[in-house]
Image (cartoon, rainbow over the protein chains, first blue to last red):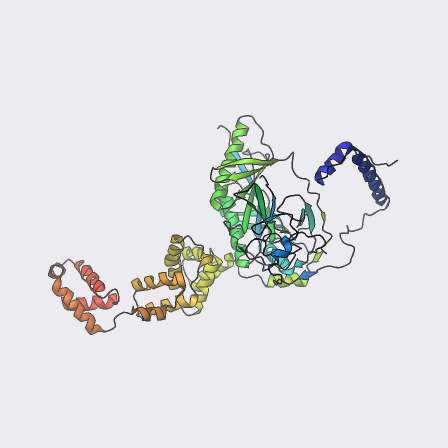
Length: 98
Length: 477
């Protein structure tokens, strides 16, 4: 039995954030999975990380840059080939309301 | 209204940087291309594509930070801000939350009560979203990703402003600093500078801030001023009626001069920021920072001081000339070609400003070149054309940047240098206007003006007024 408990509200909220509609069964499974994941991550708390800088990247690399030179041309046809629907050179999507 | 209220305002200003390419890919940032012609897998969020940071973005952002007295974060990183909207193909925006590139700065503005510092909380780098076009015929929305990935900096001020005037002064100062740096053209109308206004009111004398609202969609200084006045009175009305201001985002409708709620704090989005794993940290070494500092151009305040000392022109002139980088550049380049500062200043301040206003243009849109302005000034100084003709030539030059020397020659606008021919014309006019001659001789000295006017008309404006006067005096003696 997992130590962390994921409530119905939490799983509902995470579902909304991820734009996922879950069935009752899926919700129960997801609750269990998430609780297990949190338990696993909690192991980190056993270590004293007081003096350790937060790591954002696994490689000791910094300053990877591009020069400011245009090298991409018009590739619209290729790009729009991925669109589910198109109109007037644009991606066509359901109407957005402000 | 019995109580006195104080308005407290902080700004979030987005500025589009003047790079040639987008922040994370080599697509052009050029404005106005056909929809989606400046896009690639990176800026349309294709799975598997990876961003690579444009070095120039870091340089511009740091330069703005230095110019606004910020401390530069020498170890900075990007973060992911997650949200779903069709203008955002990745479903996240790459921005900076934890380690923004600049912090704790401030700029000085002039207010009615004197100088005042507006503190800058932070400046961070981020990418712009695509543009949504609402289709006129069908019930659908069209998405153009040309703007997706265009580099932005967001400049977040502290809540240090107390009136619309202070807000405008702050924005104007910011705009000039950034334009002088060449980091952006900062055009509110075209959206390369956008301001969101955070505003609250509190009873005068109290320390605690009231509940604030955020206002979006402000695309001119006038709209900003109107929105501030509108929101201030809306909040005061609520408080006077015993109500509570709700923390929310509002959209200003400048046509109707009112704002309406977009979203409240309750449904505020949970952006789930986390460090961007696709980009490595940016380390700005002392050497690099020193280089950025060394490259800082002369900013407006320094320029004003120098103009005063070097050119000895009035402060009024200096204010107008330095209110635009482009204007100041033309001024300096024309002087460098040997013209007198005051003369150049007059052409820019009077004729140029008038024509700009008439054609609803910004100084940034000026087309004539300094060498042509210098040539025109030369023509007047050498007595080849008079001022009236010069103004006409200037108008043409303003529209098409023609070379005034060849234009004057082609159109035969040079002043008549032949004194004999001029004398003949004047004698003729004197003969035909006996009344004016008599008036002049009987002491009405003003009558000579009429005769000069008649002469200029007969000469089609191509006579030197000084010479006309001299000859007239001789004849009338």
